[in-house]
Each structure stands twice: as C-alpha cells, then as structure tokens.
Length: 183
Length: 183
Image (cartoon, rainbow over all chains, first blue to last red):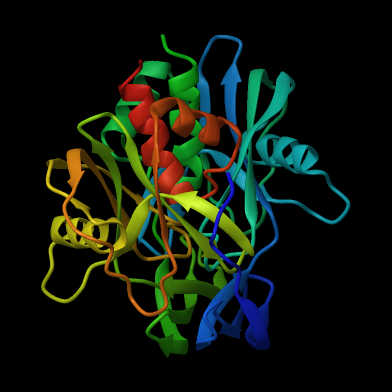
C-alpha cells in the first residue's frame, strides 16, 4: 500500500551500554517536518528463534522456566538465539534438542515478528515442527533450569485462554497456529 | 500446574539509565542451586495498551506510522501508554480517539501480554472495541505522524498472512481475534 508516511533521519547515535545481553543506544533524529527528537532509544538484539513443536501423537512440547523481569514461572515455547554460523532453522532445531531432548519431524518457518519495531532492532523467527520425538536427554546451559511439559491441544488452548501464555513473541505464532488449524 | 521450577533471588540492583523512554537496571541474582549471575538486565516500562477497533460496518481501524528501530513504515493497531490517573480502558479509549478520531462502541479487554517476561517488566492490555464510529478529527502529539486506514477483514488477514503485522504485541491479539471469530 502506498503511504504518505516518511522515515526519520538519524543525525547522531551514541551507545549507552554494549554488553552481550543488552546493547542500547540513543539516537538524535530529525522528523519529516524538520523537528528534532534528541532522545529516541534503540535496543539492539540479534535475531531470535522459537518453535511450536508437536509430537506425532499431537502433543505440544513446552517448557517451564522462571522469568526474572516479571518474577514469574511460565510455561513457554522453546526459544533462543542463533550462534555464529547457524541458520535460524539450525538454531531452532538445536534449541529444541538442548532444552527438551526432542528432534526430528518436519519443520517450516511460520512467521517472523518483532518485539517492538519502534525500539528493538531484531526479529524472532517462529518455526512449526510437526512429528517431533524424544531423541536424547536435555542438555542445558549452566544457567538454565527448565522443565519439559507435554500438553494436549485442549490443555494448550486452556492455558492460552486463561492468559498464561504471557510472552507476545510466543502468543502470536500459537494463536496463528490455532487460527489456521481449527479442530 | 505444580512446578519444581524455583525463582531467583535478587542480591543487588543498579540502574544504568532512568529516562522517561528507557529505564534499565542490572540485577545480580542468585539461582536456586546457589550459582550467581552477576548481570541480568531488566527494562522497566509502564503498562501499555492497544486496541482492535472494528466499525459497525466491520472495518478495522488501523494506523500507519514510521518505526525507527527497524527503520520501516508499518500498519499497526492504535496503541499507547496510560497517563496518570487513567485506567487501562480509559487510556485505550483516549489513544484511539486521539490517533484516529474514532470512539464509542462496546469495549472489553481481550488479553494482557508481555513483551518479554525475562527482561521487560510491563504488560500490554489488548482491547477489542466493536461498533466504533468516527466522532472527531485526529488530535496528534507533536512527534506523531500517523495515517488512519480502514481495512476490510480480508485486507487485514492478507496483511497478517503476508507477515506485515510485525509487532508481536499486536499480532498476538489479532491472531486470537481471527481464531475466535472465524468467518
């Protein structure tokens, strides 16, 4: 669709912090009408992956872990960051295998979405893996404390309708899956 | 569901930046097994709102604007932050009125979701407003450059299937709406 909305011009960028888990900069930007915003914050992240993994029996492979900023234990999709040299698909397959011990099956990218295109630079690539099976034990990073759960479709839907699927980057592909796979 | 997953303990918090549009702290945390992570970053935000607004004629009231971190012009839901003293519903109604000139109708909260419960403290309250109508002109903040679009359901679905609804906090309630309102 054609648009009359114009982009901003970045006049200056300054990094506030550059650490492996947080890279933030402040941009001085000029709007299309000439006005200056001296302070637009941008969070730079690498692209992330997550995966809706369904077994041959129709069970959803989920994980439960503690989420510090909201101080809650949540049931979520398996997710992570690509390592150097990996494709997004390879990263998603590795994360599922490490975090849950599940692998195999047929994989496709369902969608790519952003946390917040106004303030965050990255996309999350959301995969659908159908027909996965348990092929090994979990192999977790030192900081990971993850419980694997198999949910039936009814249990997954109940959890989502109850508002327990808090993570928007996971709720979006899961609701898309339910919209496109009505029972 | 009962869980063996335990919370972390925060040993120390230090703010890196405290500005109206970015408040970030680094927490020194202790994991359940006693190990220390000296550097978990938390972004503190107020709660946000967005709204799926549908006219009596079944058209979706959307907005198009520039999103700086990803350097793209996107079609999105109307969204914003609550002002002091407002409920989330009042904030959503005010944002829709200011950004689009649409109001009235029947409102309910569809869901509340987080950007990233591991790193961001806030929830976004997603409303569904049915039967809205144009009641006034747009009244934008100085920094806002917003084009109002009315999309048919078919146009909205096409945009979502094409991957143009990049914002996860908007894609999640929109896919939920489509899942729960099959044509």
